[in-house]
Length: 504
Image (tube, rainbow, N blue to C red):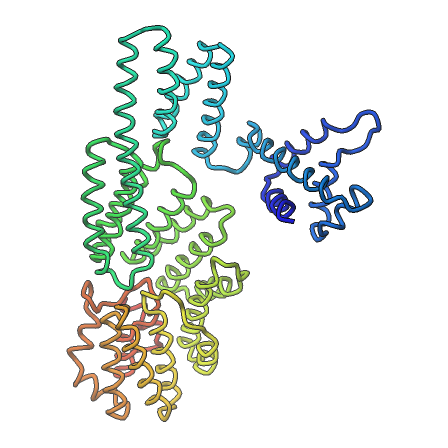
């Protein structure tokens, strides 16, 4: 029964306080004459204690026989009571909502109360509620609630035939509506750009739109001074500066975003945690690894129930510890990430973490286990950073280290075919094109690293440059910079990990 399934899923989502509120409502409706639980309370208990029961089994427990019509009505009535319990003040205050959302729910209730008071002829009390709602809504930039309150107030003021106050309300409605439309446009533009960034094959495919969006949001912010618009603007600026490898400016934008987040109208735990996490990642790109670790710790407390964001915090700590030279700590972190429950929102990331775990095996000279791990990896969807390419490159490096050169030829050919395939969608970073050329040269020169280092000196130099199109990305899939590995093969300067730490 759809009615039962809907009720079952609704009850599963109730917080402890909402469940207590529902229990109080149902308990008050017990039949005092026969001192038995109401059928609604019995149904709740059955759904909680024995969630596997089907519709027929539940009906027999309640009615001692099948009664589909009565049971359907019971489910409908109970669903309405559940929804009512969610609107109680205690449920809203203790429901685990952000402060902003709790304020929104509470103010919407107040406006309904004002309408009811108005219908009862208690206009002064209704007007008082509207005035308070306008004050609080203004602090949180809840323009739609301000407009609704002003329209309700307009009815009261018109009855009092106060023209001056009426004109003031008309002006406030017009001004607030302009702010509301400005914010809606900015929010829509921001979401559109962020969705493109998430799905884009490369940075250039959205860069012009990103710059236009920044210009548009700056205009609107200067016009209306909305903190929410200012927050969105700083996030877009951060993205632009990072695309330009200007991580100092990106860090400055994130600092401004944190400052804006302290405003009532913008703050939420999730937003604060996300910005601190972004700043932690940016610190890795600035080589400020100690700061990155501290920011990761700071961000973690803002994600008490978000397993995916908490996992991203641990991922940042993995990179920071790795480049700080604490190999054992980074290994422990990545092992923990790989063993996380395979929930829907982290399945893709687990693929990446398993790859990073294989990289650590390579660094430990455990090439056989590294190859085994790489063979178990599935291709990563929507890969714009080069994870799938690096999986293939690392497999080739493994075979070279194992002197299994007979099969490297086939691996390099497959890598060339893969490049041709992904080039059509624009997801082939220039750095990896250069690496492919060097691998082909190695193959042709019978893996004479010294000879290839001379012939391909220009390409190797390009890979080693900082801030270029083919530069190494410190926070990405290439945990072992190819040019450092190559140079270590030519001029052995110690264990690979030590060489990486000394040259980053």
